[in-house]
Image (cartoon, rainbow, N blue to C red; front, side, top):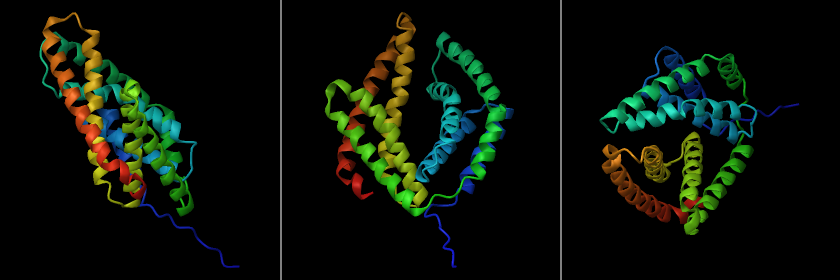
Length: 242
């Protein structure tokens, strides 16, 4: 009997598997900003690849891997602001601690097992991919609907950012144009970076040296939020067509 071979509609996974392994290796030597960012991107893209294939067993491990680098990444974004004073030294010391924790996490046998497991996961097939894409679009639309509630706008923007990122990655796996989603993601990502910085500034509200920066961040948040909402309004009617 002739046996049909299922082929994946997605781009080859080898590129991102190799990227993840390379960044882990780099970070085991030195925790620099570039490989921290690349690690998180690679892990996020591979998590979406698993979702497109309806494979769930390794996604929690990829989530933990991304999460282990999250604080270091946040601190790197802050460092790029060229801040001065005692706060800069505090952030530098905190990053050293978080970097040590990240290196320890990356040297765990669990990470090696994750890489080995990803290599043997079967390629997603067209049926699962179509179903997953539609599910992601609905989740983006529901998150965007939450922006209509003024009491939940910040939480809805946070949900929208994460879901837009996953849908964008899914379209990238298909080789489709994700330019509009990337623009929206950049607005939402910039807003999130500012929110993280503001939370740290609020925790040091008694420091007069940081007061001007706090006001500047509040102003930037308002501007970035407006741009993000406009970008969402522009793309919202076309989500189902992407």
